Structure formats: structure tokens, C-alpha cells
Image (cartoon, rainbow, N blue to C red; front, side, top):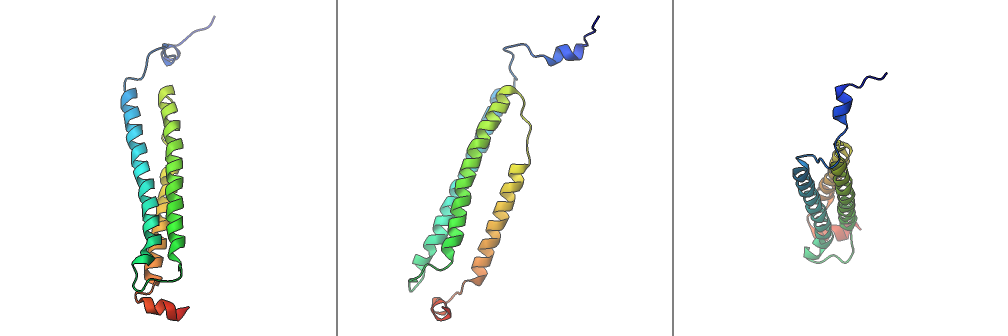
Length: 140
């Protein structure tokens, strides 16, 4: 003779019964995805601006310098952000549908570290780039 407790009966959901906040959760997931996409696009744009800043210097520099490396890193982090946010969106979407969503901290920590490293690169670049373009020609 087996006894069934009420808690195990309550844990089994009836088919067709959906989480009442499901639509709200999907909309919040989409807003978060769009925010990450804006961030990725901003990083891509900032990378392009960094690379193109040498055109604004007078006289225009004939060599690339080191700014293109920082611009490339920003652009790559922007592309990676777009890719990771898309995969995360679909993962969370599936978890919402299955009602098994558990928030993770790894994306927040990973992206925060990436932005701190990129910010450090900007600070380093700004304070190590000579203000007078003629000094750049003399030092090389």
C-alpha cells in the first residue's frame, strides 16, 4: 500500500495550464535582449570611431598607430555580445516555456569584466597617446 502526499499531486501540472506571468516574462526577456543588442551595436560603433579618429588628426597620420587594435577589440566584443545575447535569449525563452528558468550570474560577471578591460584599454590609450601629432613622428 502506497501513500501519496498532497504535495506530489500538486507538483504535477495539468497539461495545458500555463504560467499566468508567461507573457510578461517573454516580453521582459525580449526587452533584455534588445538592450543587449543596443549595447553590442554601441560597442561596434565605438570600435569604428576609435579606428577612424586618426583621420581627424592634423596633419593626418600616414601610419595606423596602435588605436586600430583597441578599435578592433571593441568591435570584436560588440560582435561577441550580439552572439551571446542571441543565444541567451533563446535559452531563456525555452526555459520560460518549460517553466524551469533559473537566473545565472555568469553573463553579468563576464560582461562586466569585458567592459572593465575595455575601459582600462581606453584609459591606457588616452594617457599614452601624445597630444601633439608631431611628437608621434619624432618618436618613431
